[in-house]
Image (cartoon, rainbow, N blue to C red):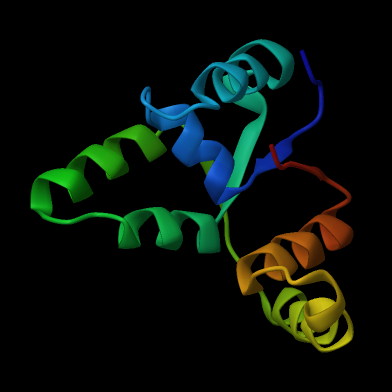
Length: 117
């Protein structure tokens, strides 16, 4: 298992939580066996994206319960400014979402790795 903290992206956690997803098995193996649940962290943007997927209060409660096991990394001014810079430089050429740039800028600042399946 990883000894360092690893940031998991929203799509990895969706695959991990949803047993009906094609990549559930690989996401589960990565999170539980390779990384280890204690080593997984998520950004506040990822948490917000997952919460936006709730259709009702029951969904919201389930999502919050699932996320309690993970540490949440909050964003600061430097991370936001780095994300804006990355978007301006790479958005058109790489077609990534805003949250990916925010996660990338956070990883660069804290020297952590991220998981994208």
